[in-house]
Length: 256
Image (cartoon, rainbow, N blue to C red):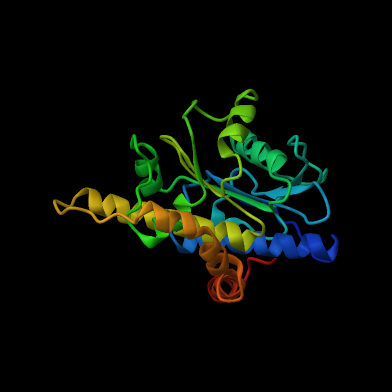
């Protein structure tokens, strides 16, 4: 009950799969370092490039227990492909991730979290407001999905896909946040901005001052700028490797 089965896939999978496993495991540890985990709940999934196979965390492990080897490989229908794996997956987590990966073949990574401030903002009638630069980045590509209970019903998939559309940021009403990315690093950068935006908005809810909003014309023109910040050589391509190095200093076992 208390011991985690030890598995090692190093040298037993393709180089591309192993790299994806290492980056995804690093992402899980990074979420712990930011305090964004929620017991054993929520998920980050990543497609192995060149395949339709997905990697997701084993149900029952905390994020700081996730390693490159104990990530579970599944197909888009939720079937576990590692027949010798001692781990299962969370059906609710799979419903959300299956839906978005089927709809967004170009994106490698989907990240779903239950950050309290994201839930708070998602529960407000008007959702995310343009109160900060972080919010402007998110508002340039955001969508919403209504709460339907635990995400285990298959017929919710089509509605979730329709609500997501081409957005990279989604607030799940009364539930949490979802971001998409062409890479694991991109999805993390998107979530970083979304959570920062929600944190700032929640702080401002207690203010009696008039709040200056970012103008819509600025938001309309900021998407191209945001792509440079998140994915260009001045942004994501520099930030994500730095984040992985940070993980390696704190959790040297993540790539076991």
